[in-house]
Image 1 (tube, protein in one colour):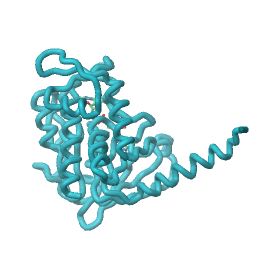
Image 2 (tube, rainbow, N blue to C red):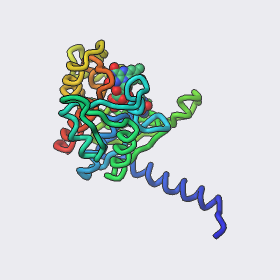
Image 3 (cartoon, protein in one colour):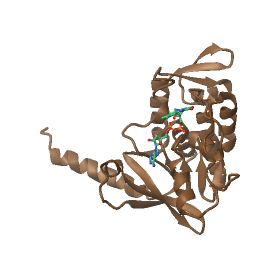
Amino acid sequence: MALDEIAISRAIIESYSRKLVNALDVDVAIVGGGPSGLVCGYYLAKAGKRVVLFERKLSIGGGMWGGGIMFNEIVVQAQARNILDEFDIRTTEYEKGYYLADSVESVSTICSKAVKAGLKIFNLLSVEDVMVRDQTVRGLVLNWSAVEIAGLHVDPITMRSKFVVDATGHPAEVAKIIAKKSGIQLATKSGGLMGEQSMWAEVGEETIVENSREVCPGFYVCGMCANAVFGGPRMGPIFGGMLLSGEKVANELIRKL
Ligand SMILES: Cc1cc2nc3c(=O)[nH]c(=O)nc-3n(C[C@H](O)[C@H](O)[C@H](O)COP(=O)(O)OP(=O)(O)OC[C@H]3O[C@@H](n4cnc5c(N)ncnc54)[C@H](O)[C@@H]3O)c2cc1C
């Protein structure tokens, strides 16, 4: 059979357009494809919810590929090991309570299982604003990352969701936009972003799970973003809190939906 380039192009354009149109009105929109966002998306999709994830970069996985200082091993504590088991990611016990996993196996497996569970992932799309109605976050404003990087003067598109989850890591990008533009008070001590504190693994890992929650109507945070919003410490290259925080927000949203 002769290959027709036009058939290839048509297949891509038609299929992607359908996928994008179906993503315009969903239950949950997650921003950021790091470990917390992916785990959150996996559990929501597994529960049958309509969930999409937007990632600015070409690659999915956020900061987990690099382990600690680019040594591509991750450490998780005992409480989070069952999440790696759920994904069938191999772990070895380093010493009591500390488990090691290969970061490449971890990211690629979580990503693959999340997609197979039904999470729709759109890479190369950046969230640049939110849709707010009646003091409630109701969706996202999206543009191609290439447009953002090139600084082109191109208008974005809008999608609607019952809930938005900010999983953008340290920069807490969506929370920052809401604090700056919407006039909504966040559920923090200051009513705005508290900012991340210096490294303290034990406290950081605990607070990240506590802080992964609703910040204002329609809007949740998880992962490193949760500590940036509520003022918890960073925790270094231990990833259990990221996984547990994604799971926690997914479970809360499943209950609400
Ligand atoms: C400067 C720096 C310092 C770090 N320090 C720590 C530390 O102290 N402790 C620690 O545990 N880890 C640290 N890490 C590693 C890593 O960020 C985290 O451990 C872990 O990966 C965070 O997981 P996450 O799911 O919260 O978000 P991340 O893995 O950071 O993933 C967030 C994803 O969101 C995407 N994104 C951001 N904004 C947008 C947007 N507007 N639209 C679409 N996508 C968006 C990003 O491209 C990224 O892929 C650091 C990373 C960096 C870059």
